[in-house]
Length: 96
Image (tube, rainbow, N blue to C red; front, side, top):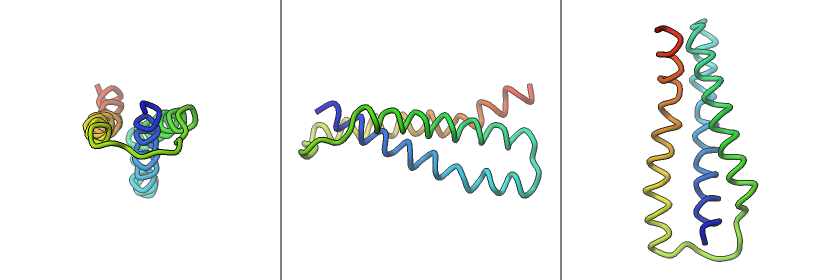
């Protein structure tokens, strides 16, 4: 059932990427140049990674067992922390 776990992680990444849209709009409104690029790149990378996982590991019939659910939660937190940190990584790279 690895495909079920990876598809779930893909869905999480799609939600995380979509949630980066509001900060991007606010950054555009206030005209923060470096942050706009960092948020846009992070959003597109996150959406692309989530889309790839969701597309290639489509949900099959079945349910997650307790063990698979635990793995999905742990991996989901780690992956979301990494992708959530991308705007900070890209911003620090631009400002030096």
